[in-house]
Image (cartoon, rainbow, N blue to C red; front, side, top):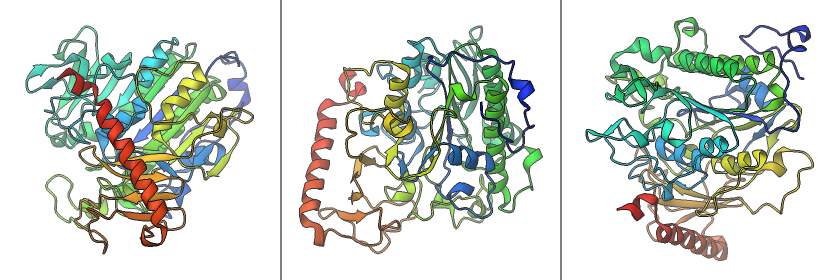
Length: 481
């Protein structure tokens, strides 16, 4: 097995691991998905940030497949998490917003099939440690047990129902003996914006819960969805990390997250599970640039110092510009995935479910449309599938409406919304969408619609057709009401 000197973790000697548990090589891998919140493409050392230290994440990227063109289909929390867990476009979710609040009547519909549900059919132990943001303990004071993780394939949960900056944010833990605030869950804290000590502890709590889960299930196959709340505003780092980064509090937060990644990998090494585990690392959307000029916010303080980076891409969270959708995408599986730190084939979080199901041997549901592709031929040397379809991505907006489409290197954009109100010198394309070649024009500066009229016609027609098909199929919420 590979041994690495992970930053912030003890160096493991061969004598410590040679007698540890080793799973049969013919068995499918454990799966660990690490998902940050509001961390932009430029918030990492491996993507070029000069003052944010993320050496453990860099080692994942350098020793795995790191996609330089990796996407989330939504630029906001709930819809992005929906797509990760289901492999389906947010336009299919039936959610009324890309970030549902604590009082939303809708949530992840029970008829959706999640990664966790599929893996449970293959005998996996499953857990989520971190932010859910796909449903709440109650909706308009009506109890809703099927809105929370245990109803969607997870055996355990410790985390928040929504982002920690909501006044109604709760820290919950699955507990079969508890009915507070709802059967099967125990409320550990509430109103997190007023409880800095709890908010500061979240990254550490999740990491330690994941480590305990790995230790308890080292002889089983397991799936961990590790959905950290950070670096979503407000920023919180454990006291042991405060003041350690040149980049201020944002750098401290990223340093703690990176240390947590190192601790997870160290635990896999300790139990001789590193070569039996696929680790996937990404973020739910770009940085919250709405606050990039804010100096005195009641919750976020001098927020301008805390906002991350989407560079070299334009805009951030909430927008259909590339900065809202481009995020890191790393697949790390030592001994199976050969290092490719600059993989250039576009991919997205929509591809994660079909890829995992393919690796494990779980059947893809045949009664619904998935929007992702199986990436095994890009990850596993010698693994041949049918020719992979050309990359397609529908960009959805803050109400989960389609606002653009990418096909190969080309992108049609018809939604210029930005939380800052900036249209970057372009007129709103209500009838005349914009066209960018985003592999050559990273900043989306040059509208190529006029000199590519045929391509523009074909792409807009395809986008309209795909959107119409989604509307015709409807969501599970639509068929229920």
